[in-house]
Length: 103
Picture (cartoon, rainbow, N blue to C red):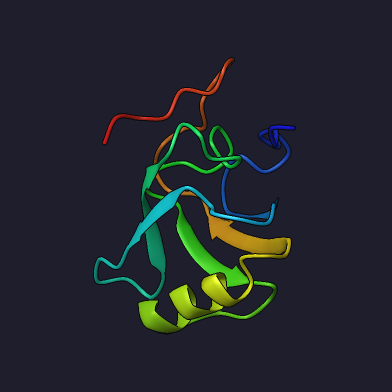
């Protein structure tokens, strides 16, 4: 089942329960306090929910100050459901059938 975009929180922080397995997100660190989404795979269960430019601010309530610790935590928790907290970037969420912005 594909996760649906929550219209109640189009801007600001939002949380997503990510299913076990690969997230299908490419993360980068661009002189900000948090990792940002660089790309979303069309096969990702988060496709249509998470947008390029959104900042990953936490995993299961914990925030991370460097990408290595964040990636290690995501790998450690790969087999379980994870609550990911994001801050919405400048791009609008996809309308209608999920359409990821080109990267």
